[in-house]
Length: 195
Image (cartoon, rainbow, N blue to C red; front, side):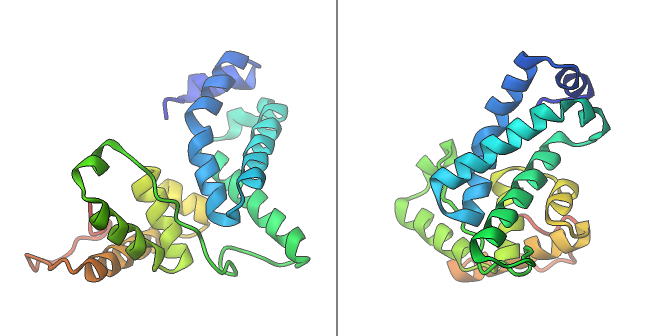
């Protein structure tokens, strides 16, 4: 995401054009992330819209934020959990208490080289992952976030993110019947790579 410190400062000072660029660059990713929690298009759209409105209303405080992408994802996650909490009339709901995080299959240029059957198998394998593991995998492999950003969004350590991703890769490769060609000693934080 091309939003450096200068861009954040411009938004904080009220630059509507920069803020519009921010919305255009992040709204689809944030919407898919919200759908992972809510599974309802209208509510996910409303939550993302509300996050942008609140971000604009509080723009003068943006200069304090070091990672705008992580901030937006955390805001969407918190809004989704608040919505679920209200819907279930439950005061305490966290990611740990989430029954599931929905993986939304996405299309990309590389998918034209993969057969529909193989792609369906990959999506099915991802869907079988535990909720937190699926969320970490989605943020890393679909949204392209760094471990540090994922850790911030999920409120866990980077090591925990790595553990989720290592587990996800192992589980997906087993479910797809992929054999590990080489046995080598894994290096921390470099182990979670399927793609």
